[in-house]
Image 1 (cartoon, rainbow, N blue to C red):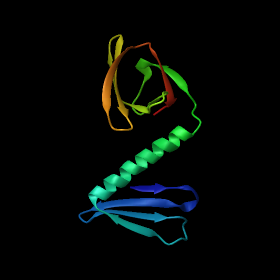
Image 2 (cartoon, rainbow, N blue to C red):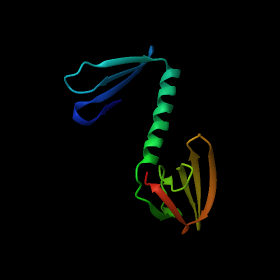
Image 3 (cartoon, rainbow, N blue to C red):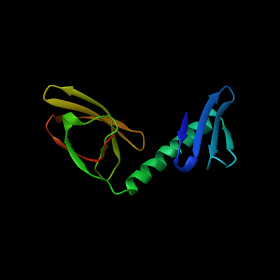
Length: 124
């Protein structure tokens, strides 16, 4: 995976038998920094990045929007005091079954009337 950031900075991830190699550069001319991680360390790093992204997203002023339950899609984030992200939406006639996931990793399913307004803080 390669991720290009502003001003020529970027990160490259490669996986192999020895684990995960993360190569980062702060600009096109800067020397690369290379980190080697075991699979467990890479998972820990990924989880920390997800938590940091959630915190940064919550800190940003959000453009809140309300959509009908039938219009929800994977990745939508509920406008509430707890972060809840849509994992799955399943239409069942006049009812919509939504599976939510919390930042803590818990999942649950709720049924809504298809026209119920759901406030979102972020569209996925």
